[in-house]
Length: 122
Image 1 (tube, rainbow, N blue to C red):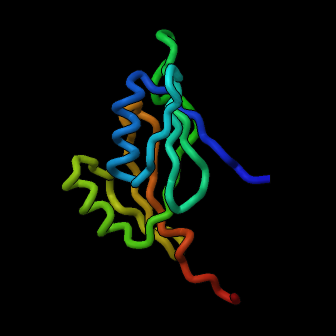
Image 2: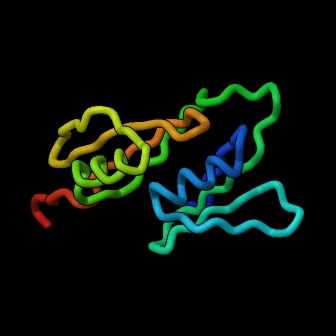
């Protein structure tokens, strides 16, 4: 069994869809008269479903962080900044790098080169 979708409650579904399309290359799919926009990556992996948030729902208060696999963290941060997305400092971890930001709904997102790190003994 694999993870197929991650649902994000968004105050502005259209703005949030544009964010993930612009910065991470997702393609938007929406059926006529449907409130949900589903974002699909050409490279596979889980889809992101954007659902309108309820009025009383607090933004950015979840315990979920979306992590995108990026081989060259510093280059991605530079390109993203040119498109209006500023990541925080680049951190060095155990054989990989990562940086954090927020989406328009104040959900935590991260880019990480962990998937590309050297694997000793393999």
